[in-house]
Length: 166
Image (cartoon, rainbow, N blue to C red):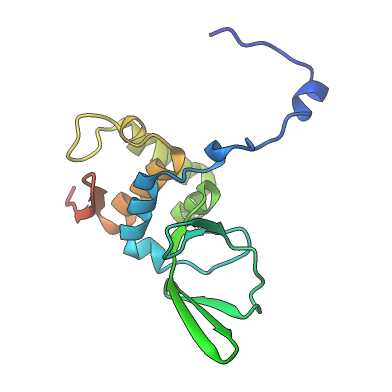
């Protein structure tokens, strides 16, 4: 691979995140994995910039303030308008940075958690003949699979999270 060197001033002109759909995994598979990761969904404390899928299966970004007329409780959006309460099921789509934050162990350095992830990623994924990085084609999917495997002893079988004993 031929790597071209460019001056820092030229590199800084480019955005840090791509402005297209590749900035975050919004694939059907990632949505399905998140929907079924009940343990992860329970951790959602909605905040500005969170991505979620509503009942209309549309991907949305939470841009409201915590004191808006809409709240999220246990995966349900609850909103009151004109005295009527509206309830909708929301599925949180954790961003890459949120997944990494959830993987951090109290009292453990970031480097140690990251090294544990890379060591795990080199091994064959349980029930598979390949490594997690080759099986799951985005960093969000790989980190979600890591969290589910390490914290909840569950693996993705292609359609659901199932219990796995190492």
